[in-house]
Amino acid sequence: MTWMIVADSSCELRSLPAPAPETGFATVPLKIRVADREFVDNAALDVAVMMAEMRNYNGASTTACPSPEEWAEKFLLGDNIIAVTISSNLSGSYNSAMIAKEMVLESHPDKNIYVLDSLSTGGEMALAIRKANELIGEGLAFEDVVKELEVYYAPRQVLFALSCFDNLVKNGRLNRVVGFVAGKMGMRIVGRGSDDGKLEMLHKTRGETRTLAFILEEMDRRGYQGTPVVISHCFNENAAQLLRHGIETKWPGADVTILPCSGLTSFYAQDGGIIVGY
Image 1 (cartoon, rainbow, N blue to C red):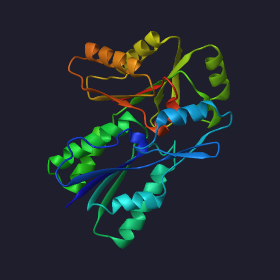
Image 2: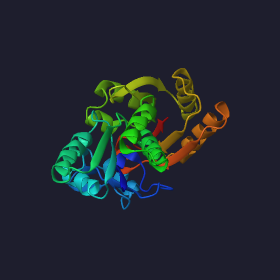
Image 3: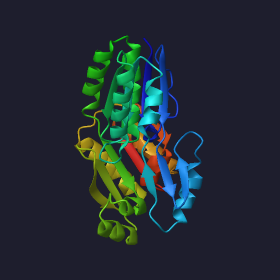
Image 4: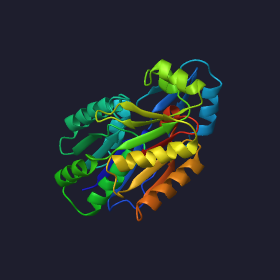
């Protein structure tokens, strides 16, 4: 039996290091529309060019989820399919994947397909993908992979820090007044992914040092104890490295991975933003 791990492009990963035997990995791209130009969030995307286009455009840029047909194309590549999507409260990607599941099972009822609504994005999705690959490598049956993955993923959390909020405000993800005041005052917003997969603002800070310190405090307060972490950043490698150092100092032995933001997560994190999944 062959396996496929499929995710939408907000997972940050473009390849899967050390895939389990007979296991493939693929992503389906979200799209970002800026004025009359569409950017496809895949390995060929030049995120810097996309960000420059957004900075020079005064209107509201938008995003579009993968179509059911795009998901279905990847679901047909294996016998056992594990799919991971961005939060269903941030995108229609999960609904699209579920439609694709029904389409594929109608014509290929012998396939096994599981779709995980990550209720998050970025690093949390990457952690789920890595865990699924690990469980497949252990030789577990499909049902056991799904069960163990759900147990592993249930306590995962995500924090984020933003210094630019234009797209969140324009797309209704952040209160317009809060975004305006924070932007005018040069403040940064630290938030989390809520239990139902929405964006929840926690704190406003000034300066990178204080922002990173608050993230460490929040991780500690929420019970983090050294499990794997994925930090994704939008052109802010320095902050990501400083945060990794802080995590490894406070929790020796923690496995911390740093990844650049994909096109979709760059759209929301914007310049200087970081997303921390753990």
